[in-house]
Length: 129
Length: 163
Image (cartoon, rainbow over all chains, first blue to last red; front, side, top):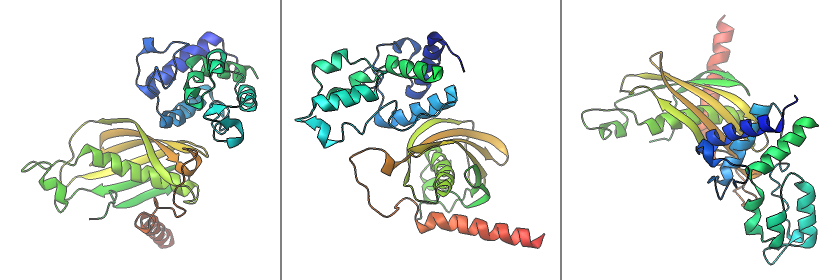
């Protein structure tokens, strides 16, 4: 199904408003799901289900929100991603903007990667494939 | 008291939908406190009844191999009060199921009239919350819950053989 980026964004916005109980105007492209929109870990499951339903797609585990990388000791040292860990994460998340995270790849800062834009980018690429 | 908030299944379509009923009785202790002289079934227990109906449906879909935990009540709307003597019917339908969990949509009627809409997200906890370990045995689906299905299967096969 062909869909413009604006259409994707508008549908993602509706999904997040419903899933997180936030106001329409809180959902901006740069808003982070956890920090700005108050998402908890369980909300990610809900969001993935709703996106799958809304866009009639399957989102394989770890594709939109890769989590296994940070639980792999090989990629983490002193609470930060190693160079190898960072490049692996970047390869796994071509849909995310790493500009800020790269400055300090502390794994507790992972949530800065999960923005509304990250979801929109992911879906836009997925829908075009 | 046993923590079972449905009395029996009246329909069970594996992986698709389930219907259960619950008869509300003055023998239930809490109704004497909620509220004195005006017993009303707490809405939270109606949510629990739906969670059990839908949760067993989700668990059975994967042969009870997953530990199915209520993760989130997506929505719960109630239209009226439920009093002793009333009969509730829970209709649950699986909307989506994946290795990580499931999403169900549910409707509840009381004596045939619309009562509530309760949609739930369940988590298969062994596949989520990475790093946390849970006990080997499936502590979610105890014999108490499985017996509801056994009872249903027995009555369904008796009904079929009577035809």
